[in-house]
Structures are given as structure tokens and as C-alpha cells.
Length: 365
Image (cartoon, rainbow, N blue to C red; front, side):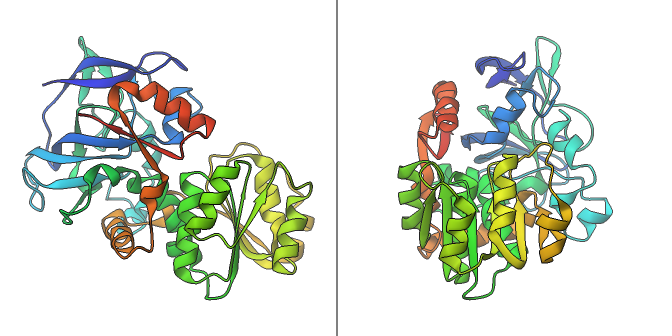
């Protein structure tokens, strides 16, 4: 079928909304009319080929929509169901079969390799194959996605357009806290970066009952929002000469946990330095080379430095849980979002990159 999609033909070029062909869903797959899709930094990273997804490609990986058709073997979803999407995984490797789909042994090839989980493509243009992204390519009016990556939304009173970002950025930040760190009541945490991932971690830390939640960022408006969402303290890195010393002052020696969401090596080191003896520092941002003195910065204080992808979550279980927190007023992620029309995708990317908006969400109609 003919659809509209935002295509990238060359590294770094703006998104171009063009007509492309979308093949019918295969066994275990769904055809979904996209209602909305969140804009994530990972889309920009792939757009600029920092993650070398084969081009030409259609990005977008925080989609949500309404099922239009189902392929053979789909039993739990039907036409008319509302769904949100998350990452792709094989479902067959040891990690998948032990409920660690976020660590699927084929994660990179399925989500960044340009193909679906069966190694084939569904998108093309004038006979030329287009790479898929995260097994969904939801910067488009329609998408084919595997049923394993689709989460049924049973809450009809919630705006479906809000829910796409739950599938990546929001579950990454919230899941790092709720699924992996599981802070004890009264513990302390510092979150470096006040974008979608960082704000989600802050809201999750409030849910767990952390006594001190420190938001570290450089945008005064974002820091104010962080306090509204649960931060007990804020540190403006542009105004404070020694961020680590300030965090240690607030927490009387350092936090129990810290999270870096920026992907900037210097901030990772600061986040690691901010935790106390036996503290844990989590890296959530895509980070390049990092040089540390292992004895002085890690082992000497018995600290842990860990990387987490996709919030260590099982999306079909975790996303409904986040929706429930939202309905209770405990996880107001809607305060992060601003809606854009699909045609304004490049403006949404620009605003996201500049910090003008925390979570841009594209509406397809």
C-alpha cells in the first residue's frame, strides 16, 4: 500500500515526507495506522549516522496507533485495537527467553540493522528497499510491527497520542529506577540531564520514596519543571563551579545512586564521582570513549558503574504499569510533551535538540 513517511536518504539531511510502499504484515505482524510518534534523540543520532543504520531509511520508534489488519498467527490483537510500540527483539535467544528482551542478543541488528526480526524489509520506494528502525519505522502514516513489540492500550479515556513516548525514552528513565536500581525508601539519587529520560527517572525516584532527588541540568525552565515533577534539589551546572561538590554537600557525602542521561563523558565521570562509597552510577545516554582511573574513581570506593538499555523493562508489563501510575497522578509525563503536526517534523527535531521542548510528539493526522 502507498503511505507517507519521513525518509532520510543521506546522512544529516532533513527529513523529507515522501510517498513510499509498505508491504502487508507477515506472520505475527500487525498493520497499524499511526496516530502519533514521539521524537527521540536516538532518531537524531541515526539521522546523522552516529548509529550507522543503512540508508535510505524511515526512522521513528515511539509510535502508537490503531490496528488496521493482522497477519497470520496473531491472536491477542485485532482490528480496531489501540496499541503503543516498543523496541524489537528476537524472542528466541537466551536473554529473551529469560525475560531480558532489552538485552536481546540480536537487539542491534533488529533495531538498527534496517530489517525486521525475520531479516526482511517491509518498506520500499520505487523498487528500492528502505531500512526499518526499531522494527516499526513510525515516522509514517502506517507501520508494520511485530505483535511482540505492540502493547495493547485498554484505557479508552487516555489520549492515545500521549503514549508513544512510553515505549523508549520514558521507560528508559523510569525503568532504570523502578526495574533495576529499586532504591530503598529514604535513599538519595542525582540525575544528570533534564530531558525526557532524566525527567522520567526523577518521577520514578519520587514514586520509590527517595528522600533527596537532585536534578542536574543547564536549562532553568527544565530545572523548575524537575522540581514540579519530584526533584527536591536542583543544580544548575552553568552556575555552579563544582557540581560534584554541590551534590556531596546536599547529601552529606554523596548520593546512593546517580544517573547520567546526557551521553557526555565528562558528565558520566561527574555522576560517578557524585555517589558515595558503594554507590551505583547508571549510564543511560549513548556515550563514546571514556577514560577513568579505575582505582581512584571506581574500585577504591567500591562503586558500581553500569549501563542499562530500555529501562531493563518488559514493555508489555511495564508500560501498563506506567499508565496506571499516570492515572493515579504519580507519573505526570504529559507535562513533558508538546504536539507537532507530522509535516513539522524538522522543526520538532530542531526544538528537541535546542532544549526548547522536552518531548516533541508528532501527530499524523
